Every structure is written in structure tokens, then in C-alpha cells.
Amino acid sequence: MEKKYLLGYDIGTSSVKASVVDAATGKTVASAQYPDQEAPIISKEAGWAEQEPEMWWDELCAATRRVCEKIGGDSPLSAVAAIGISYQMHGLVCVDKDGKPLRPSIIWCDGRAVPYGNAAFEAIGGEKCLGHLLNSPGNFTAAKLAWVKENEPDIYNNIDKIMLPGDYIAMRLSGGDKKTTVSGLSEGMFWDFKDNEVSRDVMNHFGFSDDIIAEIVPTFSVQSRVCKAIADELGIPEGTPISYRGGDQPNNALSLNVMKPGEIAATGGTSGVVYGVLGEVNYDPKSRVNTFAHVNHNQPDTRLGVLLCINGTGILNAWMKRTVAPEGISYSEMNDLAESVPVGAEGLSVIPFGNGAERVLQNENPGASVHGINFNIHTKAHMLRAAQEGIAFSFAYGMEIMAQMGMDIKTIKAGHANLFLSPLFRRTLAAVTGATIELYETDGSVGAAYGAGIGAGIYKDSDDAFKTLKHIATEKPEAEAAEYKAAYERWKVALAGK
Image 1 (spheres, one colour):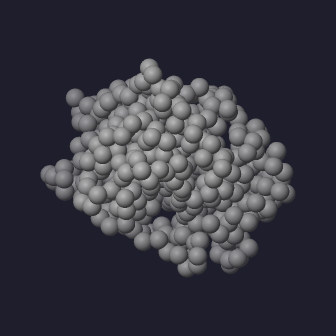
Image 2 (cartoon, helix red, strand yellow; image 1 turned 180 degrees about the horizontal axis):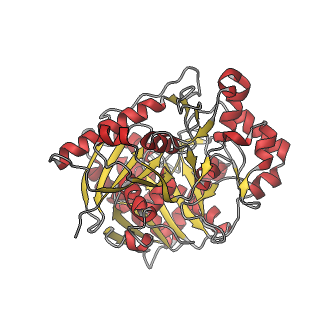
Image 3 (cartoon, helix red, strand yellow; image 1 turned 120 degrees about the horizontal axis):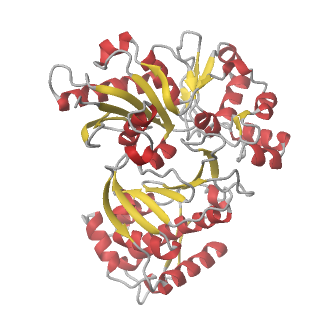
């Protein structure tokens, strides 16, 4: 049988990761990332965040070379049959007719465009925005482009197409094909879900020409092909299909085969993300979660990704390790210490929201706080347990909003990493949500590789692609979860009182 490799790229804020997957066995042949230290973010003013698109390309080339070194041989990537791309969401890349970036990309964590999005929400109307865009225009890509239009008119007037980071990388690989997807346009607040077209309201309000929107292609399809110059530079066969692209959170869901309504993907890094698939057009009237087209959204089969982001999660656990835990302790040892005290930490509650305004709290910033402390009984172990429980409770709090939108949550899938390495965290989350937690060995670049296989027709569907996905562990809700639920109710009372 002819060997077929799938090449996946994950274009992150801090680095680019490349993975080569054997299409037949599902095994990762090699993975590498670049750079080793976090990539720089340009911040010319407070609240601004930019990166050079050319830097992403240089990092991709370096990560590809590292993968080649790991595989070895004269033509290590000669068997690559398809390429998939995962990318940091919401970034704005403005290119001219030659495909050259006109300015650095305004990336996801840049806050300058908030007033433009808020003004659009008021002018278009809240009910219409939520009913058609499923979100407020907020600080997303369309609002970022409005900032460029008003503040950098010379640059704006030279824009041929706007792109998301993944669109830019696909363009570079293909030698100039400027394309995008419905999923990508939806994350930028350019897509009208009721009219199933680029939003006339958004384009008209901001005064954008239709010409700046790139050609729309299906998320899973042969979108373009690797050109000769790039084939020669990277050692990938000329004509290799670029057959998938997706934002990092939808792609993380794909990498866990979260594709059907009611399924949930979660991550617990510095911030926490819960991403659920909804099978009908709906939205949160208080706009506490974001809703985008999932990677398999395809009329008439509605598949929306409901994105809940909680800023103050893993960063609290890291702060506890650095500041509260005994010096030199490992995360595993810290988990053991937290387990030494009872469920509910004997009345101690920790509110974890200490990393900025929380969308799930309607953009309030209550800060982190400790409640119910008793100097006679509470120790470092109680603090550590209450912190992890507080993080799990914040996940559950957000998932209640998703349930109100019609999502029946029975299973949470996650990579075996970060907070999900902690049995205490997993047990608490399962107990208070009633959901079973399934852990898998995967990551974004591997998921993008599988996506490429689906888009190129190497796999018939996602179930076929992920049949070899490695299952690590399952955490089922405890039969007697009363103590966990009582602690959660106490936590919500503390949150309400702030």
C-alpha cells in the first residue's frame, strides 16, 4: 500500500507547530514547533497587539525543516498527500493585489476596535445583530478593519483582500490564491446566518466594499494547491492539495472528533475554553458566549460552535503553585496535596476571575477572591483544592448558559494536558455538570492534518478519520455528588456577592 502522509500546521500566537501523520495508521510520524521561546507581539500602545504575517511564514518554514530532520532521508515529505491549517482566530491580515501584507496583523487579543464594534451593535440593533450574526460585532475582525479604515485610510485604500491568519498561510503555500471560508467569515462577524450570505448590515454600516472579501470555499475541500516555488523550498510535492483550514478552537474540537450537536470540547491552559456544537441557529441574549460556524457547518445541516472562554483558569493554578504551594513542589505533588482535604475544602471558596474582564460575566471584572476562610482550620492544601474546584465551577457556570441555548451536554472531550491532567479537577467538573469526561492524545496540528485528510477525500468523514484517535482515560460523574454540588452552590453565592 502506498504510503500517504498528512501535514498539519497550527499557526499559534507564540509559535507554529507542524505535524506529519500517517494517513493509514493515524500515528504521528513527527512533530516540531518553532520558535522555542514565545514569538514576539508588537504593542505600540496599551491594549494593542500585532504580529507580522511574514513572521508566521518564517516560523512555518523553520518548523517544517525541523520535521524533515526528525523524519530523515532524502525526501522526507515526498509522501505528503494533503495539508491542513489551524490558526489563531480573529486576526486581521490586509493584503494588496500582489498578496503582500500592507501592515502587521491586528491579532485576537488587541482591544482597540471595541468602540467600533459597540457602535455597530447600537446602529444595526442588538436584536438584529444577535439574530443574524449570533454575536455582537464586539472586538472581532470586522471592527478591527473599521479601525484601519478610519485611522489608516491610505492602507485601507490599497487593500485587495482581507484575510484571517490561516487564509494568509494558505495563500503563501499556493503562491497567491486568496480564499476564505464561512467558518472564518463568521468568526470575523462578516456572516449572516439567517440570510446565509456575507452580512449586508455589517458591510453597509462600516462602508466596506464586497470586493475585499476573498473567494469563499468549503472548509473541507481542495481549496488550492502547493505551487512549484514553495514545493522546491519546503520539499512538499508540487500540487499537494491544501484541503482544510479552521480557527484554533473549532480545530481543537475537530481534533477530538467533536462534530455532532451536544458534543463538547474543552481545554484548560492559561485560560479555559469550552466549545460545544449546536444543531440549530441560536444565541445567548446576553452575549455571554460567542457563536460561530463550526468546521462542518453546511446548509441545511446547521452546525454552530458555541465558544465559552474563561480568562482566569489555568493561570490561577499556576499562581497557586508559584505563590501558595510549598516551594519546589510539582503540579502532580500539588494535586496530591489538594486531595488531602475533603470535597468543598471545608467551606473555602475561590473565585478565579483574576485575569481581566470575563465575557461569561457580561464583561464584568470581579477579580479573584477567597471566601469563607477560617484561620483555625484552613491550610495551603485547602487553598489549592478550593482553587481547582473554583476553576471547575467556572466551567460549569458557563456550561449552564450553553444548556439554556438548547445544548444537551452529556460528554466533555479534552486533550490529556494542562488542567485535565488533574484527577481532582476532572472529578469536580464531572460531578457538578453530570457529564462524562473523555481524555484523548491529540493537539491542534494533528487535528489539522486529519482535517486535510477529510477535505482531500482520503477519509470519508470525521468518524473514519478519527477511528485511530488514542483514548487515554474516562471520568464518569460520581453517583453521590451531593458534596460537590453543595460546594458549587456555595461558590455561586460567593460570586453573586463578589
